[in-house]
Amino acid sequence: MEGRAKNFFIVSEKDVKSGKTTDVYFKKTVEILQKAKCSKQVRAEVRASSLPENYSWAVLSGIEEVICLFSNLRANIQILPEGTIFKEEIPVLEIVGEYAEFAMLETAILGLLCQSSGIATKAARCRVAAGNKTILSLGARRMHPIIAPMIDRSAFIGGCDGVSTIKSAEILQEKPQGTIPHSLILILGSQEEAFRLFHETEPSTIKRIVPIDTLGDEKFEAIKAAQTLGNDLFAVWLDTPDSRRGDFKRIIEEVRWELNLRDFNNIKIFVSGGLDEYSIQRLGSVVDGYGVGTALSNAPVINFSMDIVEINGIPIAKRGKMSGSKAVYRCTNCYQIKVVSRKNDLLPSCSCNGRLQQLFLPIMTDGRLERQLPSPQDIRTYVLRQLENMKLKL
Ligand SMILES: [Zn+2]
Image (cartoon, rainbow, N blue to C red; front, top):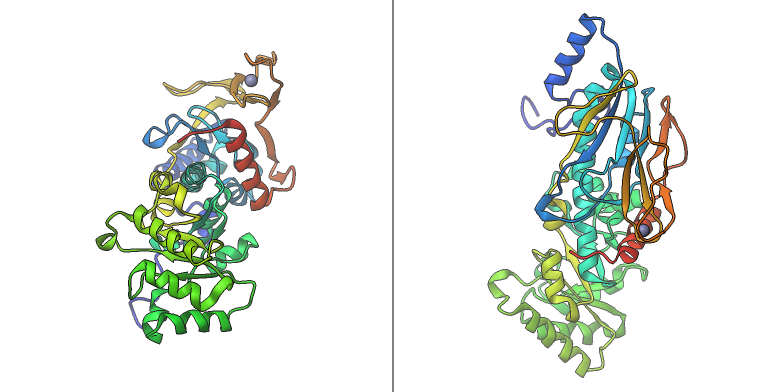
């Protein structure tokens, strides 16, 4: 092909690491500092001064990619552990180094943290709404395919149980999950044949989940699916279009009733289609699993900013920001977070008398990794433990 449609509109990882995606004012800054032979060590801090949509908490995600961004630099970095639940004004990342060396990365650092944390936060909110019901991340189709693994990883560590795309699942070392598409039923021309062929073709490790809203009414298709696959059927899936929904909860209740009446109590009911934490909450009692797409992939970003808080060891920050190096402690009992100046060696105390644990710890020293990074499964467990122990609400 000549001239057109040869490439996606993307950059390579190398371009990102070399600062090609930076806002140009950072490039100008570096050029001017170099011309002035002005080389200074700075301490810069990343935090969000507010959270979107009046959220009262958020989940930190994107740390592993930030570490990857710094893999060739000599900076010193400290972080809150990936998956930490934080509030506004809590520092989540601190970089100490020669300013000109990392100025060109600021745009990328923020982009990595803002989007990923937004998605992980939305996933955690869906988890709070869903309790222990299953949530699958289906958001890949709403965004550029290049970032599908980032979307799915963020959704997974925020609390989703599984992801739908093959590469994301491979990276997470999980099995991709989902139903069969309506197109298979339309092309084969029969629900029963599609269900039967699905069962015959796919390995037994794949859960049999089938759509029941392709050609007929959800109730009758659910009965058909259950009678075709019997107890091999894991779940029926409703993705009923808005124009046919009416009272969606009542439709689901009716399907449940008819399945139970025929002794198919074990067959679960999954739903999808424009779901978010609030519709999950409304459907709660009648649904076993949720497929969440757009709400995850298009989640509001967390507006982190990066600010200089110290230059050559002297505390200084712009208006509205607190200068100097901070320590971040969290109470192991009530999970309250306290931010204190490092100059003040006094360990803060918590009103509940719980033990305070230092959370803001070095992850990179002179470009060398201080410890192994946690797996997505470990981060997810950490998020779920905090959601439970902190008894968080939407
Ligand atoms: Zn406490």
